[in-house]
Image (cartoon, rainbow, N blue to C red):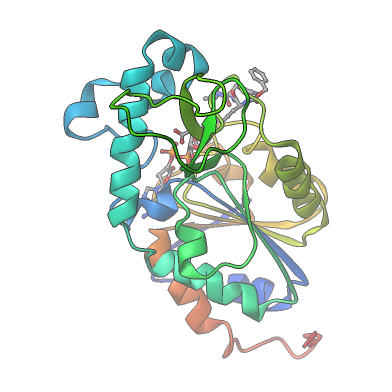
Length: 262
Ligand code: BV8
């Protein structure tokens, strides 16, 4: 049964679990970037995009039906992300990586803010909206002649260009996905942070960790389908909870039989 804790009252048991962990795997979602001013994927979109359902826009069908609209949506998100700064939650995760024996960061986010915060190896399950690929060749295109076409066209084959993100109905990058499941299956502590745990196969990662006996910590101001399965559910914003976890980590008053791994 999960222990519900508000962010201001993180039980010493969570700290101790984190302190004792040999291998921490983390899955982040759009909630981790919320405090950087990047709207989460499912919260009402802002302004011009308020009338669109992101799930309906993030599909190859939507792009083929209206490439200009989908390209403009990503261009709007790209400029939002371009102005965003990594927040205290991103920075705390970059710190945590240095404090545990083994650490893997897996993200569903496409905003590159974990890399901006200094996280060294980030598994991007859903791609990266700062990268552009050719719709047909699926190869990264670094630059293209500005012809005013929206979307621009591939300088190599003339097909439309698209953001290098995984749309609904598209398979995830095989290497990233298998690395993510390896981490989930080998870790002894899994953290699900800022995700509604609705999108598969990413949402199966915390379950895979639980099935292998890992401790599951969820950090989210709201409940999700995962909350009742979490060993510890910390109910608060990542930008507050993660720095508190980091602060408490070194001074954790460990039980006498704690085995020091460092
Ligand atoms: C695939 C990139 C083979 C583009 C995205 C099994 C079961 C059911 C359905 C499926 C299944 N297998 C496949 C599917 C279909 C589908 C799917 O999962 N559908 C769901 C919606 C039912 N999956 C796919 O199509 C995947 N492809 O599996 O291929 C296949 C295909 C078809 C059928 C079978 C197999 C591809 C999925 C990837 C889609 N691309 N994004 C883009 O970004 O534009 S997913 C999109 O959702 C984003 O990447 C986002 O990251 C991701 C997950 O959402 P969250 O990150 O969780 O964001 P959300 O807004 O939902 O939640 C934010 C959370 O943060 C909330 O809980 C909130 O409370 C919290 N929060 C808010 N503030 C804070 C906070 N937390 C902490 N701190 C805060 N301050």
